[in-house]
Image (cartoon, rainbow, N blue to C red; front, side):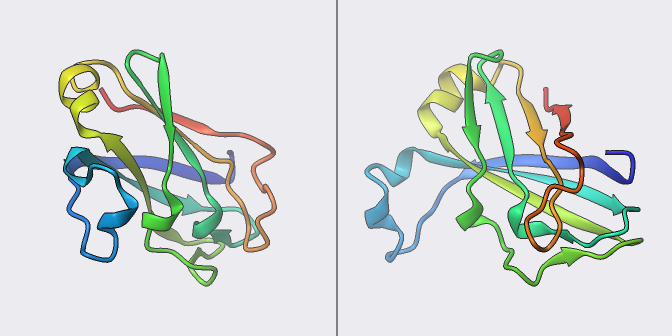
Length: 136
C-alpha cells in the first residue's frame, strides 16, 4: 500500500457489557470480550479512504483460528473518511469468546490483517494489498 501508510497504534481487550437492548442478541453476554485495535492511517493516495468499508481479520491461537471484524460495533458510517493527503484514526473491533481468550488465546500469538483500503465507493484502491501486524 505504497500510497497509504498504516501504523498499529495499540489494542485492548475488555469485558463486553451489552445494554438491555443488545443483550438478547447474545446467548451468553457474560462470556464475551471485545478486542479493539487502533490504527493511524496516513493517506497519501489520490482518493479518500472510506472507513466504514475497511475489513480486517484477527488470527488467534498460533494461527489456527480467526475472527472477522464486527463492523456494526465500529463508530463509522458512509461519511467517515480519511481525505487524500491527511491522516486519521481507524478502529477495528472483534468479539471474542471470553473463556477461549482467557484459557487459550491470551498467551498465544495474535496477528491482525487489515485491508484492502477502499475509497468512498467501496472500490479497492490498494490493488488487493493488505497490512499485517503481530499483536504479541
